[in-house]
Image 1 (tube, helix red, strand yellow):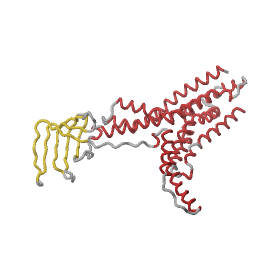
Image 2 (tube, one colour; image 1 turned 30 degrees about the vertical axis):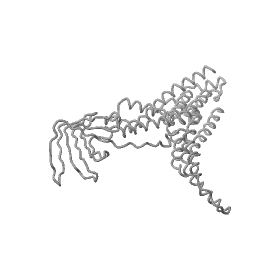
Image 3 (cartoon, one colour; image 1 turned 90 degrees about the horizontal axis):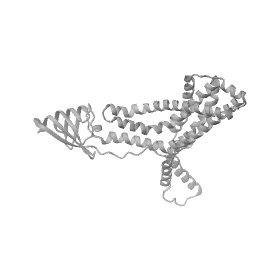
Image 4 (cartoon, helix red, strand yellow; image 1 turned 135 degrees about the vertical axis):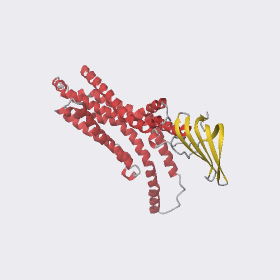
Length: 387
């Protein structure tokens, strides 16, 4: 029995590592291509920054990749176990299915605890750091403000156009200076130049070469040539503080925010004396916005906890379905897994859609797939054990 348990455990872990790696790569690729690679191709991000972004995204995607990998691993392992008649041989030896799948159930509980740690604390912190990284990159770096092939109007009193940007080297620079009323005072054009970065990161300068300028004087344009180099200091736009979103807050932070919001909403002036019916109506009016405003926080908190049990639900469903499929093909197992994952996470999408409808209790909707998968999986597993 011990040998059989070790054999199944090795098979599950081997398939789990493979499937989690595939799902993680796919989920990471979607985020990296959409948000990071675009900056890399525009020379706004270094290769090291890309790897940093991948490292920060990894815990966030693991919350989804690990349950998906667990489901696929169960379908593949027990599908092959059944197709190779190994399950029949084990039953002939007097081993029940429930005794056989004990290691898989224990692994699912262990991975559920791991998902809880990641989902409730590590993943939100990493996602917040990842978003701050992108925000700082696109709002504090001078070369992020000065983009090529576009008229930049973010710098006060200037309109700047740069034909090509290669690191700090600039080509075909066109600058128009405006007065406080937004009227053009002068224009300057340089064949090439370079970006001089301020060590503090708040300002920058353009060192321009072969520059020609023209200034408006009483409605007439007076051109002149600038010999040598011309240094133009620029004041970059101030960066506002980025407020974290709900999905970037840990469970404890969400709980604290909920308490703060409840305290804020309840800190209202005393209600004057009135009859019982009026007081009841006033209490209902005061409690309605409280439920509506805290509902998104509740949905996110319940989602973090509920998703932690996805590994257990997927394991309970995956084992009997793998036995019923009775196939060795990997494609069948992956197809079934993707369909079940779609069903599971569709409840979360529904809850997010209804998060402002507190009367529908959207924070409880995220628990429905757990109850559904665990109940169905337990029934299928019990029926498979009786066969």
